[in-house]
Amino acid sequence: FSARRRGENLVASQKRQEEGVGELLRLKPGMKVADVGCGVGGPLVTIGKATGASITGLNFNAHQIARGQQHVRKAGLDGTCDFLLANFMDVPLEDGHFDAIYSFEAICHAPDTALLFKELYRLLKPGGEIAAIDWCLTERFDDANPKHCDIRDRIEFSNATPDLLTTQQQLDVMKQAGFEVLSATDQAAESDPETPWYMALQGKDVSLASLARIPAGR
Image (tube, rainbow, N blue to C red):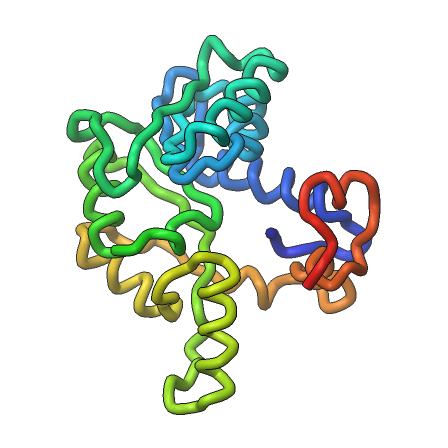
């Protein structure tokens, strides 16, 4: 998902967000980059084409990797981009292997967020940067409010996101792993009110492109 602009469809907003992460990390040819929890490689292909960087998608699902390899070959990126079947909390690569790391909505699936950030810190070269877009609870979340807890529990169950953290808790975990937080923002709050980020989940974003990417539902 991504913050939508007025009149912008889902696919366009995703492309803008993905290319924006590449620009934020100043990716360029020759850089070794990790896509953490890469899925079938959608952002990997977009960012690889836009920046020329060498990107390795980390994924623990062989079927998704096979689909991702097809996408990479179709995009002509098989000379620079690849995949590694691995648990992203225990990656069989040496310290400081990557110049940069990014992740789209994957860190929230880690059963141990603190362990994951420690592993990402290990994999990153000194001075390297990570950009992570993730599901977090806002600071308005009240764990003494049954309605709040019910919403959180149903999100965690439906999306396989164990123990969702608030934004501040997530930032604290990153700092404890050794990272310096340069910037953080609530992208949901930035989405245009007439085209909110969750339009596709409401079934109000019907197009052939959107249906191909995210099933209509709620």
